[in-house]
Length: 364
Ligand SMILES: [Zn+2]
Ligand SMILES: [Zn+2]
Ligand SMILES: [Zn+2]
Image (tube, rainbow, N blue to C red; front, top):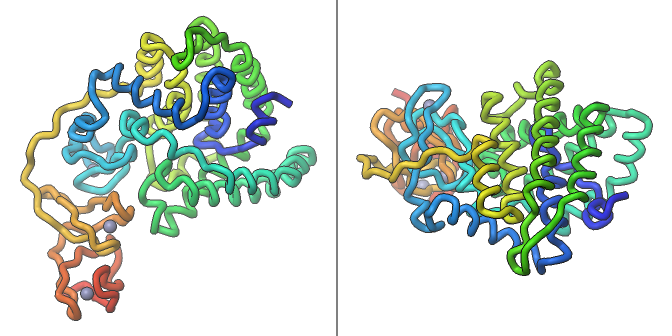
C-alpha cells in the first residue's frame, strides 16, 4: 500500500473518469515533507494563477471568460459567481471557469466526516472489488458521492444545493463513472502507473516554494491524459456521458475533469510549467472585461435573492440557491406580503421565499 493510500485512505471520488480525491491528494502528498498545511499549499494555487494571468483575485471577479452557449449560441455576458458557468439566456451549463475554481481551491476537500465514511465502507468496497460485484460497488459509490456533494457544495454546481433531482442525477453520474473505471483493467493499469510516477516526482527549491521538477512531472501528465482518454472511450459506449445532469457536451466534461487534476498540481509547479499545463489542458481561456449592460432586477422564487437578467433572457440560474428561474414571464406579487417573485421553471405554486405563505403563478 502506498504512502498516499495510508495517509488518505482509499478515496474513490471520481469525476468523469478521474479519481479526484487521488488527483488532489497526490499533489498535496508530494509536498508533505516540505510544507506545512494544505491551506497554505492551496493558497499557492491562487498565487500561481495570479502570476500566470497578471490579475489579482479581486479584479478577476469583474472579468468574464469568453464563451458561447452550446444550446442557444448566446455569448456569456454576466460575471459568474462560481466556476460553473450557466448561460444568461437559457440557463444551460456552458463552461467551466478554471480561474474561478482556483479562487476557492479548498472547496474540493471534504475533511474528516468524509474520511470516516470511507473508513466505514472500505471493507465492503474491497470485498466488492475482489468478488467483482459491480452492483455492490456501485451502491457504495452512491453513498460516498452523496456525502461528498454534501460536504463540498462549492466543488459542484450550485444546482445541487436545493434541486433534489439534479443532485440525485449528479451522484448517479459520478458513481457510475467510478464503477466503470474501477472494473476496467486498462484503467487500473494507468492508475498504477500514475501512482508510480507520483512517487517518482523530484522536488526542488527551498521552503516555502518547493516545486515539482518538470522532467518528472510531464511523464505523469502524459499518463493522466492517456488515462482520461481511455476512460472516455469506455464511458461513452456505456452511456455514462449522457447521464451528466446538466447535459454537458463531452468536451466540457473533459475540461472539468482536467481542471480537477490541474487544480491539484498547480500549487506544486513553477511558473513556466504552470502555464504550460493550463494551456495544454485547454483551461486557459480568454477573458474580457465586464462591460456595463442593461439588466432588470428579478426576484428568485427559490431564495428571494435579487437576480439581474438581460433583455431577451428566458431562463437563468440563481447562483445563490441553484434554482433555474423562468424570466420570460412577468413577476408575480405574493398575495400575502406583496413581495415580487419570479417562478422556477416548471413550477406553478411555491412557498413565498419571504413570508412562507403559498404563492401561485398567474394563469392568464
Ligand atoms: Zn444558452
Ligand atoms: Zn435563488
Ligand atoms: Zn410572501
